[in-house]
Amino acid sequence: MDTLFKGVTAVTMSEQDGGVIKDAFVGVSGGKISYVGREIPREPAASVIEGAGKVLIPGLINAHTHLPMAFLRGYADDSPLREWLYDHVFPAEAKLTDRAVEICSRAGIAEAVSFGTTSVSDMYSHLDSIFKAADEAGIKYSGSNGAIYFGEESDFGFETCADTVNMRGMHLKWHGVDGGRLRFDASIHAEYTSSYPLWEAVAEYAINNGLRVHVHLSETKKEHEDCLTKYGLTPAQLLDCHGLWKNGGIAAHCVWLTQEDASLLARRGVSAVHNPVSNQKLGSGTADIAMMRRLGVNAALGTDGVSSNNNLDLFEEMKAACLLAKNKERDPAAMSALDALKMATVCAAEAQGRQNECGKIAPGYDADLVLVDFDRPHLTPCHSVISGLVYSARGSDVVMTMVRGKTLYKDGEFLTIDWEKTKYELAHEVMPLVFA
Image 1 (cartoon, helix red, strand yellow):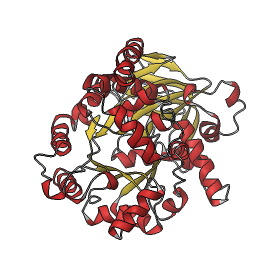
Image 2: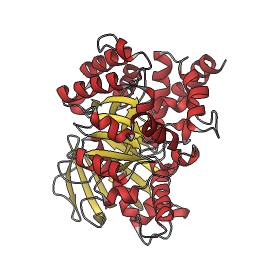
Image 3: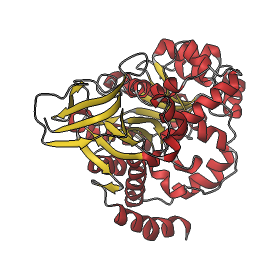
């Protein structure tokens, strides 16, 4: 055995109650979880991690974000989405180079792993640079390039459109690297930033290559209603008519989803990714996650980009998701702490198509593990570990993050990222490039 966690409180997510095991032993061998139990295993361990006062959870999974947007933290606050995008974000992003995106990606990944995130579903341009940063950092990464097309419909060609050419190149280069730790998802940015030739081309490519899709969907009231006015269909219905949901995947935001839309996503195996903090900051509204879950939609959690959040803390997202659901339904039982924790683990793993490899602490699963320090004032006393994780814990309470048995972060130290170098490059290369 490579590593043994000794005397931890393990939240396995393998049972209906969260599978909390106090004074547990969890063993890791060859990147996999090899033992979970209350008795010390007979097999000796090369390394033993004392877990008194600590809670061990499955690695958190961020099912929708834009990692390189670290350089936009706190920029253009308090603007509505379309103005924020077209007047501020898109012009700033147009100045980025491949190197700048790689630097920003390292910064985003560092923040994510320090907050206990082990896997990310990401959408951005300059995708090769992000894959490179994710590969070196050791995190699980499902990347997509969010294809956009504003040209004439008659001029579109799969072999000439820059985003579809890039899509194929990234798929062939990165999909399945390191035994599937890195994956590629087919993607369009959104209905309102493209048209039907692109939707059908991406749908066909996804179907022919067995890829999932990643799309922004019904994020704002204007987006949703403009689509109804233009096409007579909601964004979910419209994209379904063009085959985009046939392989399942991720629909991010879903703030203005109707019950009919939710039933459609459930039938197609498309996961809705709730981004509660970003949606509130941008004033987009509150996704009706309780309704979606009642209709059978798999609901996961995402942070969206740092630029609209302003961090990558999934603990904050879990609490926000619970509070917003309770308030929207006027029902304190509308979403439990366990429901929210599932959205950031087992449900998010399903959204990524990784449900058989992560999201639980169980023998045979990848050793994607996070250690949370519960010996802190805001976590004391602890009547319920699940409640403590969702309502009281913060990303800063994470003391160790492991992916496939490899420790990426421990006690404030990054083991696969040169944080001081990254911070310097962000300040002295990226910021002058974009904001000089």
